[in-house]
Length: 122
Image (cartoon, rainbow, N blue to C red):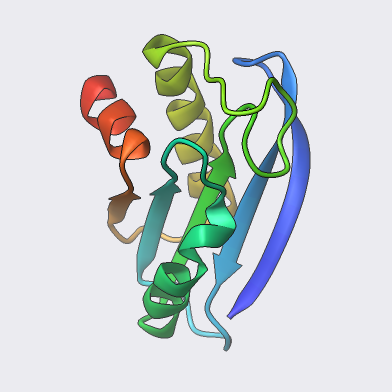
């Protein structure tokens, strides 16, 4: 698995957030994309084992550290509501679609508060 991390200025949050990309080893085209959403107090690194399992099966995984979580800016542990979380999910999906370069399915892997945000956003 090839893991990369980058900091970016989030238009939705108005903060520098950190996003993580996990690619399978090898030159084969990815089978699909997995959006990783962490829970409250987490960071994407907590879900590295899940990313390894998906990558071993040919999927590209990506996610962000919520504002105030992991390597992202913001008041520690604070996310300013479900509407912001929904916009951040949209940002993350658009970014992952762009960098994954595949037409396969999108899979959602969400833990705890991340699952709540995803269900609310759907």
